Amino acid sequence: MSTDHKAVPTEYADLPPLPLLEEGCRILGLTLTPRQIEQFAIYYRALVAWNERFNLTAITDLENVQTKHFLDSLAGWPPTAGELGVQASAAPRQLHLVDVGTGAGFPGVPLKILLPDLKLTLVDGTGKKVLFLNQLVADLGLQQVAVVQGRAEELGQQDAFRERFDLVTARAVAPLNTLVEYLLPLVRTNGFAVIYKGANVAQEFIDARKAIEVLGGETARMAPLKVPFLEEGRFLLLVRKLHATARQYPRGQGLARTKPLA
Ligand code: SAH
Image 1 (cartoon, helix red, strand yellow):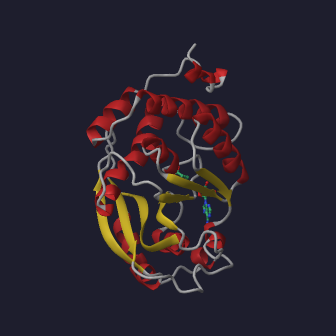
Image 2 (image 1 turned 30 degrees about the vertical axis):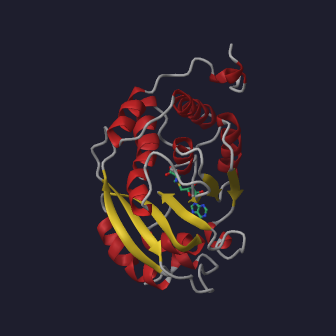
C-alpha cells in the first residue's frame, strides 16, 4: 500500500467509481485529478455511513449523489469564475468563501475539492451537521476549512464574519428575500453572493429586489445552469455587493424570516 493511502480510514477501502461525476465534469469543462475523484468517492461513503445515524440528506443513491449533489454544486463555479474574471480551472489564492446553511456540505465542500486553494468556511445552525462536517473535512484531508455552528443572521453581526468574505454561497436554505439578509452582510464590498435556485426563481426574485438594494447589493447576473444528466432547470443568481450593509442588518429575532424586507 502506498503511503498516500494510509490517511484514508479502512471503511473507505474499495471506493465506488463515479462515472457520472467524471463525465459531467468534462461536460462542465472542469478537470478532476484521480485524487479529487477519490475525495468525492470518500465523500459519498461518509454521507451514506452518517446518514444511517443522522438524517443528513434525502439523496443517498450513488447516481443521485453524483448528479443532484456533486455536479449541481460544481455547476455553479464556471459562471461564478466568469463573473470574477478568473479561469474556471483554478481559484485565485486566498479567495475566501463561506457556505451558509451548508447542511451535509453543499455546495461548499464540492467546490473546495475542485478548488484546493479556496479558503472555506462552512456554516450551519445544526450541531449534528457540524459534527459530520468536521469528520468529513478530516477524512478528505482538506486544509484551510473552518466549520462553524451558528445562525447566519447572528454571525452577520459579529466582526469576525461581517463583510469578511469574497464569496458567500447558499443552496436550498430560505426564500430569496430572507436569504439575502442572511448572506449580504457577510460579503465584502465588491464580493458576491452566489445563490443556487431551482427553475421557479422568477417570482422569488421579484419579491427580493428591494431587499437586495437595501442591503447594499446589485444583481449582477441570473445564469441558467445546465447540470449534466438532470432535466430540471436551475439558476444561479450572482449578487454583487456594491457598498457596505447598514448596521441594523441582519435584524435579530428571526425578522429576516418572519418579516422579509420588502
Ligand atoms: N445547502 C445544503 C443544505 C440545505 S438544507 C444543500 O443544498 O443540500 C438547509 C440547511 O440550512 C439546514 O442544514 C439548516 O440547518 C441550515 N440553516 C437554515 N437556516 C439557517 C440559518 N439562518 N443559519 C445557519 N444555517 C441555517
